[in-house]
Image (tube, rainbow, N blue to C red; front, side):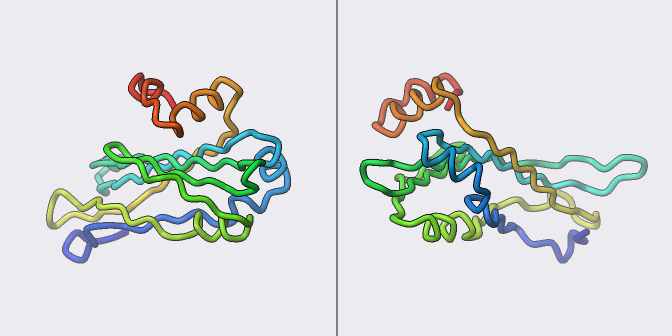
Length: 149
């Protein structure tokens, strides 16, 4: 728990060993991209129940391109998307995923006690999701405009 007077105005979030699992890596190599959906929450300590003050979501997409023999990673936040980065080896892609992501999320009230909670959902995308991801990576923003990845 963080007292508000000492609370940072941001947090850093990283995910460790996301590609180390053999099953996950095998699915990536066979053409099924992985979506990691993060949500950082800022909670204020209350009496009987704590209160969710704010949260920030973002998504990280990872896929293996068999023709280029590289891993592609894209980070997507509410208002911006990074240009896909390519990594020739699994270790390099793993290191990129482990790099801490700064997230600006500051307490709203002074004199209160706060804490951060991070939620991570990891899933392998279906063939329909894979098709929409291909369009999205080529610049067709229609699936994303509908609120889907």
